[in-house]
Image (cartoon, rainbow, N blue to C red; front, side, top):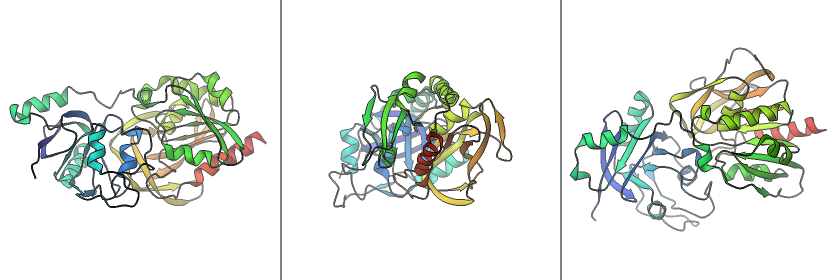
Length: 374
């Protein structure tokens, strides 16, 4: 069997040599690692990974192939994919095609056969950074050629990306079973698992593009508003932040997840900052300070809210408290407004893939709407 040589090049000059996996060519993005041992299909199709090259820390990827049920969106969003040992056989009763075939079908340039443990340790020491995967005519150029190409690629800090992955037109998803609530969902890069968790709780969703006005959001979200996950630097999402302020002023129940947590944080006056290497994976311990319980949770975020965890903050919208913290590093993982019907979490309670410890948060949203709209 013949292999096409490939390079993974980091902006600090590090080079990892392997073989082409998926499509052949070149691609650029922020190199990040995820620690999940399962759920690679959900990872690939998560819009939050837009313009990122994802490294799987688990060595063996592709065992169960690709099916037609587990996609989190309509396409693969990662800029590139890095694995150590792709499975040569896809074996699962739902599998329709191999992982490599899907990567080729969607023109996702990837690399296999490199030491992903060494790469992950390097990123944990140096932080997430720009990278490129090259698998075409690599013998025609020296190392400096590829390093310079990576250094000239866009950075994640300051990147305004949610508009690139948001729906362009509004659409309605009916409630599963009896309709109990009418909610507007602002699509910043929403996952299918979130939509399913909302609609199965009797919520009729009007999904709106990130460009929707506050008036459109409030008209569609009679009972409440949801802010989704998404990619990019939250500091650049100025329109979404202003719309969120209008929702708070209207006293409408609000729930945000991941990027939505960062948007809510900035709306109430907190800053956001870029984490050194981020939280990505399905095994992150989080303390829910409102109950005292520890949850194992699914994460995918490179930015976080900068808020004091030792006191309640006074803001334009009243008192705000950090409701959840990551037990690995004390990063803010949730916010709760004491004087407005609003809360958010930084992680993914829909857990696709991952544990379901935090699925109660969707029920907390319906309980908030019940209480406020009684």
